[in-house]
Image 1 (cartoon, helix red, strand yellow):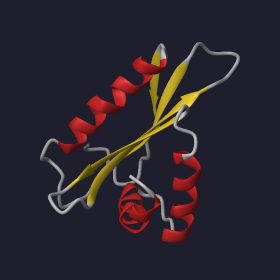
Image 2 (cartoon, one colour; image 1 turned 45 degrees about the vertical axis):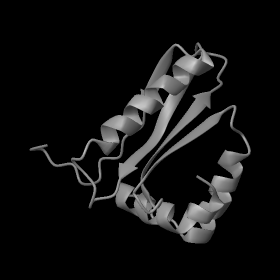
Image 3 (cartoon, one colour; image 1 turned 120 degrees about the horizontal axis):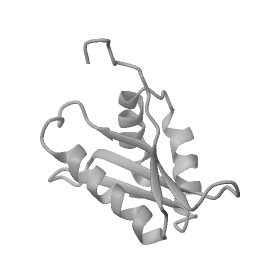
Length: 118
């Protein structure tokens, strides 16, 4: 992924429940991509090389906790869901903390779209 993917990634981020403009996301991607030791952006693409899902893992560096990472976001395009893309992104995301020597992976979650029946 690079900043040229910002428009499509912004669309996916809105589906995740976090409204963001293309310009804002372009700036955020530029920052994350310049710190590969602390951020891992995983992207699933379709046959036309268009992003259809992404996952973001970040390393947590806090003195009160052992080495850890956080799955900060995971989304798959609503048109592509239930095809195993999310599971594949999650599998790759789970491997990142191991490679960093982290002892755990924390998961952030948004409750938008979740009902009591879910």
